[in-house]
Image 1 (cartoon, rainbow, N blue to C red):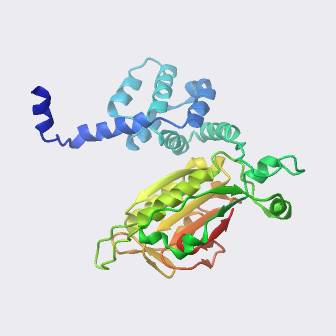
Image 2 (tube, helix red, strand yellow):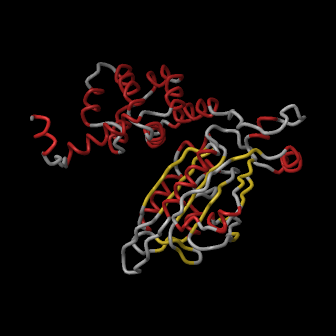
Amino acid sequence: MAASRAASRPPVQQKGPVAADRRRRIVGACGMHPDHQETLKRNRVVLAKQLLLSELLEHLLEKDIITLEMRELIQAKVGSFNQNVELLNLLPKRGPEAFDAFCTALRETKQGHLEDLLLTTLSDLQHVLPPLSCDYDVSLPFPVCESCSPHKQLRLSSDVVEHSLDNGDGPPCLQVKPCTPEFYQTHHQQAYRLQSRPRGLALVLSNVHFTGEKDLELRSGGEVDYSTLVTLFKLLGYDIHVLHDQTAQEMQEKLQSFAQLPAHRATDSCVVVLLSHGVEGSVYGVDGKLLQLQEVFRLFDNANCPSLQNKPKMFFIQACRGGAIGSLGHLLLFPAATASLAL
């Protein structure tokens, strides 16, 4: 009877600080990426000796990486070394964003030498990407790792073009295949280095439900395109960041934050995917306001994003049919109208 009565009770809606703390605990339970944990472990002694916590804790608190209770627990320890150790014990449990937030906080508190130390260690850990399976003779006289890793050809059947991904009939079966030896030998001198693990960070933003005065239609089938692209870039070895239903202002702010992530320094490329309604040169936020694509590209140029200098930055825009070359030389690809993509 007790179980029956409990099941009939309406769910309790938690609000305010209690709900916020519960969300932080859930995020923390996701855990930090193993490479980030290993990076902190390898530099634990140096960090414990050199960290200056006075401002650093405030930055981490502002970013919801630590709670007020955690800050009090750290500050209750006797001596700076013990306080630093307590923070280092907490960080790996504070979710997948904790490492990047910690690096940002180091930079903002003029402890950039420690951020550089962490990013160098992370780069060393991620330097070699295990090759994907090859369907040709690996004894051929060319670098096997590079032939399998940087240049892949995504082959989609002609049905993918004939039946648009927007019609809701489900995603295609994606398969990533290594390039042929002939293609590699012909093109490898002109190729970018793509050996980091992950190969890069990929942001996939999908706007489906629109409000505002423009009365934009629901993007039926938009989730199919979104899930297909997320699957594709996971297969290609990218660390995926996802966003749903953003206003134009939120899009700009989130893209700027993504462009400034410290993890870009340790990777070899970057992908940005924008799925929305749009007009020539712009895409709509869910509030019916436009975000200029040139503004998006500007966030990732050498002046604003030096971490990606001399690295390939790929922008996939699905807001209409077709494709073009942007005025700054960026390749714009529209997935729903593209049959094959050489990578």
